[in-house]
Image (cartoon, rainbow, N blue to C red; front, side):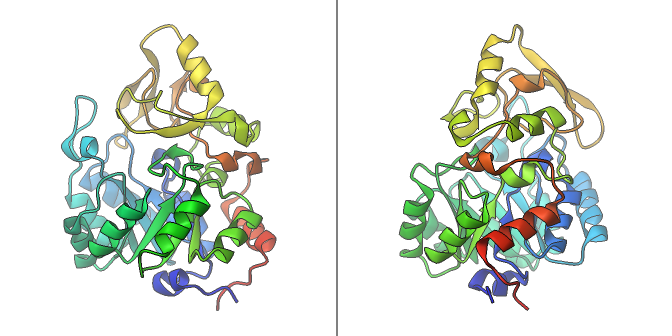
Length: 331
């Protein structure tokens, strides 16, 4: 049986967490992953997030599953304070999420006790995705119930600057809370290796971007299916709306964006249904509502992208990871 401190803490059957991928991770994906025995995550890093639109997303998720699920918040200063392109994060959203979800997760800001206490006050567990041993220690001291150690192999915005296995060892040695491994994990063999190295669970993103329930644009999915690890790049190119935030994307997206003529590459829908333009070199996820030059947008992908072979139901992805890793579901 593969029962870990993570599964016991969260109440899921499998030591697998789906990454919260902004607009790419709608209620349908989070619920499907949770129904399959892992921890599904609802992404909130998307246009039009308000207390009202989040409440709707949470209600949709709860109608689809009664299993534990989580909510991911990006708390980088530009998200908290707002900018010309986005309003500041309404902290009421954290309180609303904590009352509905099992886990409230934070990413890309220095760990702060006030956010952890907001999650706990609503009855949720608090998690922080970190990129260094020092950040992991700060998260544990802030009261987090578990941490996610993100290596440089990860897709999307990357906090880590060292390889996942190196960071995992450093974090495990420094904190007493459960530790999940993230970055470049897309196969059961990768899952097994992380667990063998002492992780209490793993975080998988890129594989789930190609799940049938994900809201990722079909052209983006096709690019993932056609890519290998060497086709990803760690860069800061897509920083027009989020400066100084390293990330990993497909190299083809950089080439296409650099060749694109004009400042607007397309448009996408906010949660309220209104349409907004997408700047060239902007961050964000090209979801199914997005139109325009999809290939010239940020096509986030981790080094695990070679494991993406086709569109699959989320439950099938989870089952493949379990079988390849030689895991047996916890009772």
